[in-house]
Length: 429
Ligand SMILES: N[C@@H](CCC(=O)N[C@@H](CS)C(=O)NCC(=O)O)C(=O)O
Image 1 (cartoon, rainbow, N blue to C red):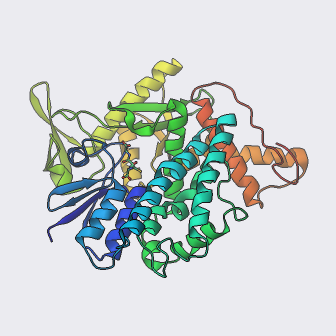
Image 2 (cartoon, rainbow, N blue to C red):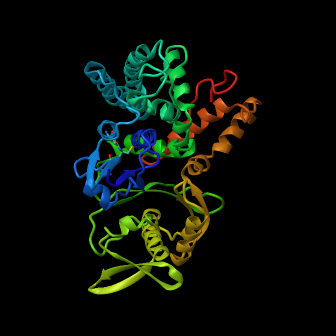
Image 3 (tube, rainbow, N blue to C red):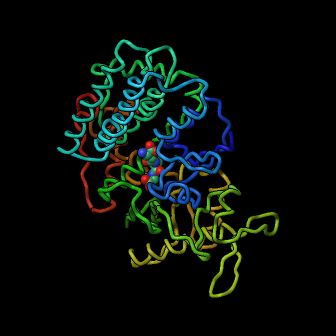
């Protein structure tokens, strides 16, 4: 049948649905993890129109758009059919899948990133759209109608996968048990299927991913993924001290760049598939360490990955210095949550090369918490009201969400007030 490759991203709901379909059909495939914040040349080559994951590459021919990919998989591998055979039923399934993506998902996302009146409106229209799905699933175990999941179940799989994460990040409720009992029952049945369960991104990773894209969308009032130049953005630099005299740098880096033989990118891919496509060379260096070879001022130079990281840190240090008007020495570096021990260690080493004292390495979610004194806020509430909220997960979650929102707002303003109605025991914060 020819080789099958999937260019995907682990936290993408669109990629997850394709992997479910491939697994249901028992299709063997090679999975290539991409980075939507720093897209690979392979992805750009195979999906030059939308530049999005997932892309299925079958026999060297690319197919993009997850719902189209599901249909392709169903038509190519006939066992375990996903779509109904009857033309009307088939068209109806395609119709609802498109509706759920274009209405429910888009409106839920809009509700997550907007505020005030706009948010209220988005919540209302999302719920009106979800009401159609509630009607559709009533009296059935699965959307495909029988006891087996099909195309429409996979297409709707994003609901159990991430609706609660969207709700949490957006600080709202969209699909509640009172209005949507059948939809939630379906979601529970769906998620319990072992094959589905096996390919579910961890909640933390999803939550991180959504926090980042929602905050980007809020800041730019546009989708995360439109910029085409390399941006290393300081999402916020605060003059306030963090742990006695140091500066907390909160970094978010996006996006892609124009490849040339002296620009280095995709530092985190270790896959030979990508190395072939990079315009710079990667060679085996001392102790089998990969070395990156670039042309600099007409000469060939070799750098270890840690040296590249240190150059980035130096650049960030200089931006911070210009902003603060003083030298930066002690830093806290934020790295993606999925960084393993050796990646964290390499970041510390890069700090030493950049003459920085890396006091600690933390991940995105921790940043939000400590930066805005999450713990301090909880203690303050306790002192003032003689009530300890630490045993109340809902109150903690609401406080955490408020702190996260404050962090984002402080990226563009200097002051903000936190107000939470009835945080705990009917007391406002
Ligand atoms: N309609 C597309 C949506 C795919 C999509 O939005 N993928 C995101 C990751 S979740 C992506 O690659 N974004 C990069 C971009 O928009 O540039 C599909 O169903 O495949």
